[in-house]
Each structure stands twice: as C-alpha cells, then as structure tokens.
Image (tube, rainbow, N blue to C red; front, top):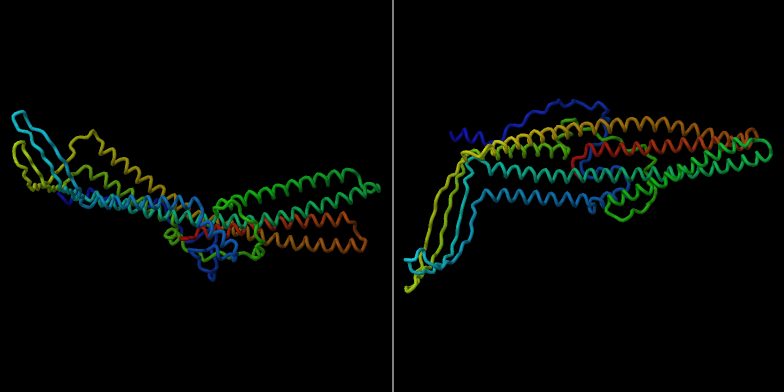
Length: 445
C-alpha cells in the first residue's frame, strides 16, 4: 500500500516531443576544415579590438544583465528556502501568566522558557519534489542569464558592424551629392551656351534632392544606431571610433556546425525549457501529495516556575512529545483542481520547450540562408564594382582625349558610387549573418 502511494506522489513521466530532429542542416553546412565554434568569446573571431572592448563593457554594465542577475539570486534563495523546509524546525518559547483557573482556586504566577521542535516526515516525497522544482528554477534562471549574455553580445556585434556599414555609406552618399552638384554646374554652363535644355537641369536637381535626402537618412540612422549601442554597453554615448580595418576582408567563415541534436544540448534557452518541464512535472507530484496523510513529530521541553499565592515558588522541568497525523476527507474538490492546474502548467511548459527547440533549429537555418544569400550578393556586386571602376577609368581617358564630355564622365562616376553603396550594404548583411550564426551556435558567454 505504501509503495502504491509513493508511486502516486512521484512526478509524471515527460511526454516525448511531437517532432523528429533533422539529421543535417538543410540551409548549408560549414566546410570540413572550418574552425570549431567557440562557446565563449566568439566575437573575438572578428579581429576587432574595439568590438571586443564594447562587448566586454556591455557584459559588465548592461542593465538587462543586472536584472537577470537579480532573478538568479531570487531563484537561488527560493531553492534554499525549499531545502530548509525539509529539515527539522527548532524554536525558543517563553511566557508568563498570572491569575486563577476558577474562583475557588488561589492566584498563581507561572513563568516558563524552553525549546519546541517539529519535523514533518516526507513520507510521500512532497518536500523532496518541491525542493527539486526550486532547484530546477534556479538552474533555469542561470541559463536565462546565460542566454541574455549571448543575446547581448550578438546585439552589440550586430550594432557594431551596422555602424561600420552606415559610416562608409554616408561617405559614399556625400561623394554622390558632390558629383551631382558638379554635374548641375556643368549642365548650367551648357544651358547658358545653348547646348542643353532646362529639362536636364531639372532632372539633375531632382536627383540631387534625393541624394541629399538619402544622405540625411543615413546620417540619422548612424546616430540612432550609436545611441542604441550606447544603451547596450550601459553608457551615455559611444565614441565614433576608428574605421574597422577588417571590414573589407572576405568575412569570417562559418564555424563547423554541430549536428541539430548537439545544438539543442548546447543552447541555454533550450536547456532552460527542459528544466522548466521537469520543474512543472515535480510540482504536479507536490500537488498530488495533498491527497495523502501528513505525519508530524513534535517535541517540547521547558522549565516552569510556579508560585501559588501564599506559598513558595517551585521550578519543574516539563518535556512532551507526540506524533500527529492529518488526512483531508472533503475539501470541495480544491486539491483535485490544484492538481489539474499544475498538470496544465506542465503541458504548457512542454509546449514552450518544443517551441524553444524549433526556434533554435530555425535560427541556424535562417542564419545559413542569410549568409549564403549575402555571400552570393557580395560576389556579384564585387564584379559589378570592378566593371563600374573600369568604366569610370575609360570615361576619364576618353574625356582627356576629347572623345566624350564631362557630363558622361560624371554619369559613370555616379553609377560607380551606386554600385559601391550596394556592395557596402551586402557586406554589412554578410557580417550580420556571420554574427547570427555564431549567436545561434553559442552555448556560453
């Protein structure tokens, strides 16, 4: 009978996940000789000392991480409290009374002091399950803190590479404005000479306004990103810094990708979901123990000093102990309702766990797709940049030989600037994808 009750108090077995893990990644796979993914300071792969300093500052001063650290402290304290409930409780008692029990009794003074101890036997493992659930919560809070550190490092790295792209695009936009202004000046001279109509001047002027608006938007986006980066690193503002020498590199190759099953074992958000399921299952077992008897051992020992009116005071030692048992008989369905609540929460935790697993798998596939797309885009735009550079050089030579006019030269230069801006955007997207892949594979920071 006891073994049956103990079996009823254990947490339910966890259901199997409702989907199968893929054997390989469909979005791409790193080369066999690719470097192994770092699980700690992965951002150092990019070779920027400025980025390294920004990430370290963020990990030290970011407010969100301070919130996560406070939550870890709370969870640990709750776990310590659950462990303390399993131990015997000892307290000091003292008191004094004066009076009589009835009109026929004499007045008496009673003073006492002593100790009282109690211990509820954990026969059905309810307290052990509660302690295990709190321990899982504490571990989950630590994993949540770890996931927040990974996300923060990735956000800082993303902001940094986007700032590098915006700064370079702003320079190119300024060159485009200067080229158009010069082209308008040439067009006005030709108009005055009767070689050009006013329609061309109006067209160039419209394009100049658009270029200036684009430059203003890039400048605003640069300032906004700097402010966002300052918030991430916990500072009032972030200095512009020097241009990143490694920006023009081919980019950091994708690290050797772990298998999907290995990824799920590494990701802190997924591991946290698994702990949440175990904690919820343990609390189902705790709720079920309310159906069974509670057995408590009590002990008290104290010294009493009794003085009856008209007599001498006497001191005696009083010791008492006993065992109490309580069993619910009728509660209107409260216990069963509480069990149903915790069972539903366990199902919710399992659904969140599966969602975290699917999200982790999707993060990798999306990052691979973004990296492959951006690399293909960079390759095409680099060829376009080479072609536009050659065209610009040829137009210069033709102009110096008197075979073309300055307006044509300026048109070719503007085409080259547009190709350069597109290439900068593609390189920025490739760096962002490189950050995303490392964030998806990171297991610790």
